[in-house]
Length: 420
Ligand code: LLP
Image (tube, rainbow, N blue to C red; front, side, top):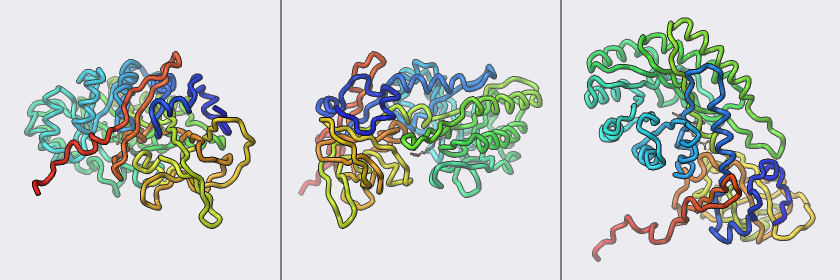
């Protein structure tokens, strides 16, 4: 294999000697390839974010629910959050204990709450009515509440999750009603939670948000923890030198916030975070075959098999993913502007628009970087396409299949034909 612009994967030694052409030959294209070492490194960075001793990093599983991924996170000693019975099911299968799992609900049914209660998993509710429902189901039990402290942040308005325009959390003006419901059902409020949104590269909104949820926390006497949510960003524009989030500064600022809260509150409680993207995004490169290159007027297109059913982020949020170009044989690198598209029958099926890249030819493989967060977990079978396989490159360099590609039979297995 010859990398025409392999700066990022070279720096991480991402493929550890595996040739992308061999991987695609063995497991098909598109293919999500993961690097186990990167997942472990990111878990450790966040576990050690602060020096305050009662600190817990919970991986937000929605970013990547692959069993192998969850197993690695578990082996690094992190806990996990869950949004649904399906995530809980995968997490238990991956080896997490019920006490490692925190179900953060949003508009769930009674049976979904009951699923978590039956398994002994702590539930976080996000409105008064759902608190009431929970009280009826688990009278005398423990509960956590998601509040909306009013400060939101994120890379796109669709992923900002606090502030008055969003559906999330209990507004602090309802604290008296919260107290009444807790009393009515003899519930013990053990934790308060918030998540301001996804992907910040500057720490200040997160710190400001942390202060807001801590102000809310002061209204409750017996808390065991406060959970500040996720949102820690990664640099998606590494090829043009975007710097990383300054975790050291982030940890130091959080330590100060914790210290001052503990002083006022009068006891040490646990502080939790819930990062998804930071742990998973950089651990995967999505490989795709280039099937053709063509012009429409002045515009040049490379046609690949990464449709938005395989990676929806660019179509859904205009997200940027850096792209590396791999050729079978060495050739000169001539940069030109090109639009990378998929194989779905919609003109919004664009992975990268007017991107300056080394000249791409049919038969090349593209590596779409930073695809590990909200990549495979948001895949669909749109156009009756098969969701791709996943391969893990272990720390010893061995490539292991961890998810098989869908089959044609699976596409139809839940349908029932009419009797005509
Ligand atoms: N906690 C809660 C309650 C959340 O809703 C989320 C993400 C997280 C934690 C983790 O956030 P993270 O650390 O990954 O930023 N699909 C979008 C991102 C949606 C995030 C949804 N909630 C994307 O591809 O950018």
